Amino acid sequence: MAKILIVEDEIDVSFLLKIELEAEGYVVELAEDGNLAWELMSAYEYDVIILDWQVPGFSGIELCAKLRQSQKGAATPVLMLTGRGSIADKTCGLDTGADDYLTKPFDTREVAARVRALLRRFGGTGTNQIVCGDLVFDLKSKTFSIAGEAVKLLPKEQALIEFLMRNPNEVFSPEALLERVWHSDSQVAIGTVYTTMKTLRKKIAEIKTSCPIETVHGLGYKLVN
Image (cartoon, rainbow, N blue to C red; front, side, top):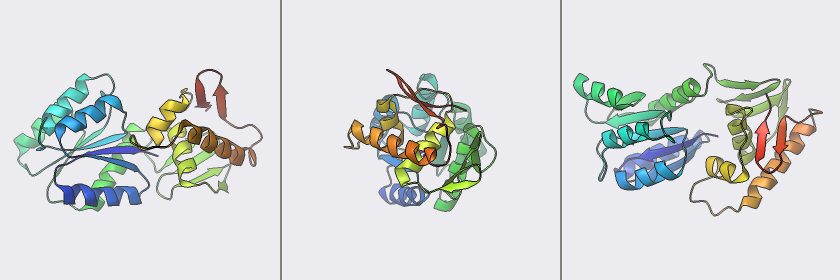
């Protein structure tokens, strides 16, 4: 499941965006000023960053520039939100490193659609499905199937398999999975990752003889595609 950071100092706007995006199943975190946003960007990885141009502390333009210069966020998709609608302002935002640009006022449903488009684009798929062998995760319906057979998963199991399918053949430690799939400020213990992984693999094994999620001893887990 995608993890999204919203950098917005208008509380009512960020609240409505959070509701809309959480309804889509995303993990959503908020920052009301540029300084806090930069701390979060530096410490954690996000799948999409929604960035308001005018926030206290570092501005949206400054944050976008700093993000692009950093190793951690160089390729993170950024959706810039602003009340500035001139061609010059849009050009400035895009030239600084934003991947998409939306002027206020906007409908939260359009923001959600833009986020879906960025995830498809940067997730390496132009469709609403992630496919790894005979594993299929439908991004629109949030359903998972193996060789056409539906597998009923709990929300965090869905989030975990989606993340692994977005990053096939890459090894992630339990700590990295906790950071990427759960809220950054979550009080969840590392044992929750092991438990969720165990139940997910068990459900896959009930249908597929050889579970594609492998344990890399001493390092973590990877989904073999």
